[in-house]
Image (tube, rainbow, N blue to C red; front, side):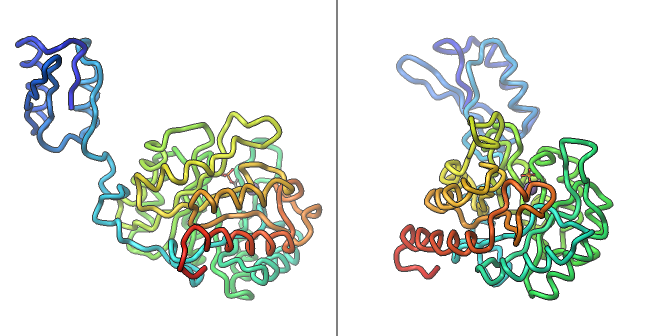
Length: 347
Ligand code: PEP
Ligand code: MN
């Protein structure tokens, strides 16, 4: 829908917008009101370039899109009934809990094996463990290929499926070859469109699930869902959205907690939403409240950093990992909230 600056367009302007939309296979239908005439774009109006050309005209106030730009991730798309399942949980039917260390320490694998067993006992369905880490400080530990073996060994020992972040094509290949069932796209790469395309193409034809973090900056919902569309576009729609806090941070927290966007996402997309409270607030003592708030807001799951001995951890674990005991209590309360939100449905 084209809204002009003034009450109506002159014939020359109508000719110009008609020429633009016709070159994209659409046509214009004026809708004459008492004080203002607006111009409907009839046809497939999703072409970004057509919209940009119209928005660039000085006599146009704005373009309101009727059609969603998301062919696959939109709540009204054919995929709206698609269900994603992992670790015995079908997203939307039961609260999914992903938990484990921020970073696997390749020199001390036993911590990870112990954490894996402990998060399983606490009620987690998926084990997370960072093999390769995106670090702000170039001199900080960047991860290690060896940790992939530790991750898969922990998966074998516990029977839990695993989630790990990949940042480039080599890591992507190593993770898929090792059989990692859930790949994480981190906040720093959430808008790396060539990586999103590589991941989308690599997981197409597989059952792999992609946990897509929200980008670090306070980006729009449109941008977040579009990033998911990039991946799904190759044929595997198993994409989960993961709000994890944005920058600038709320004073005292690591980021600006954004679990409150869950209902807004759910109005626009069918994609499950799993909130990461750990990176959002960034301190272990604040994590349980953020996790519970996320479930109250309608999250389908939680991704929480946990460690058997946080002070012995590397990466984010010393400051933001919760202990298995705190995790167990958080999961118990989260399930209660989940049940309250969905009367009559099992947790
Ligand atoms: C992580 O999960 O450890 C991580 C680095 O996450 P994010 O990309 O959200 O910072
Ligand atoms: Mn982390």
